[in-house]
Image (cartoon, rainbow, N blue to C red; front, side, top):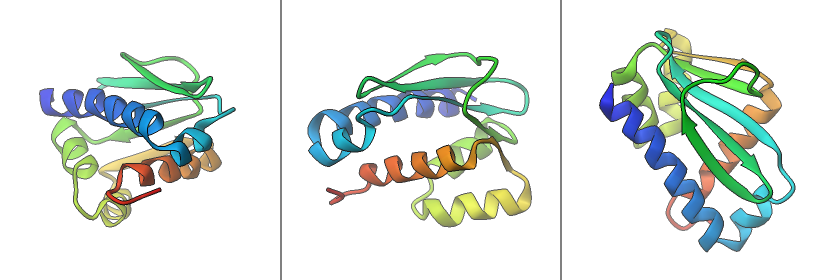
Length: 123
């Protein structure tokens, strides 16, 4: 579970760095207002806020996020989020029910676009 929590914290730092160092990423988040969370079925997780061109997060869950990614448990969440082939890992996890996504799927797709800026060479 600790690795999962650390990965969620590190995701925030990676997104913050991408926004700060990549003008295309900064433009992508400009004007966006979104709160979402990633959690385990047992309720451990973190919520993320994108507002005013910045990415922030805090430990714990909130009542009404735009979407929620719920992983079966910490180890499966870590494995899915850290997989080299992330799109395949997400699709497989959805199929095997190791991952459930609820909420606004348009926002989920927007977030997937944001994570593309974490890939090497993305401008």
